[in-house]
Length: 178
Image 1: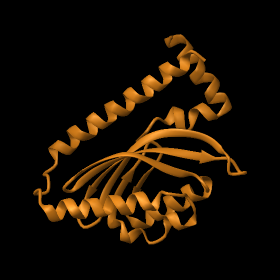
Image 2 (image 1 turned 45 degrees about the vertical axis):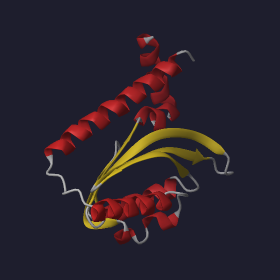
Image 3 (image 1 turned 135 degrees about the vertical axis):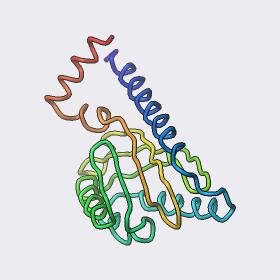
Image 4 (image 1 turned 90 degrees about the vertical axis):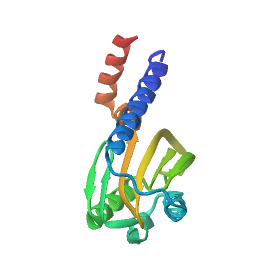
């Protein structure tokens, strides 16, 4: 398993590269004027965001309008959702396939109108025991609520490493990189 550290390094580098690219894209957008009120509103939305993901279950898709705007733009390595109804369907499906999982918040960066929340998702087996963990970050843009969210995580660590045929292929590729 000597390829595992390389996999983690490549995953971390991919995550850092994505964050740098996202920051550069954000730099081109007109920033909201920094105010104490904007900072406090962003902090409040981050707290609501963190509370929502303490434990994954059916409630995840409920009352999304308290956290997200009607025109929310959401994207992660697997899916894209446009608008609250689309995001509600995404979260309902996510809650169904990930029931019992939870997020451990490891860090956060908050500025007026934007935030990044770093997390570890803990997946569980049917008996409730821990199955696996993977790390990621959610980048959010906030006005009165979150209007844009982009989640970054290593798709290999989260998904590909756990699908038998794909796992074989990714191990083969990694072995050739060592």
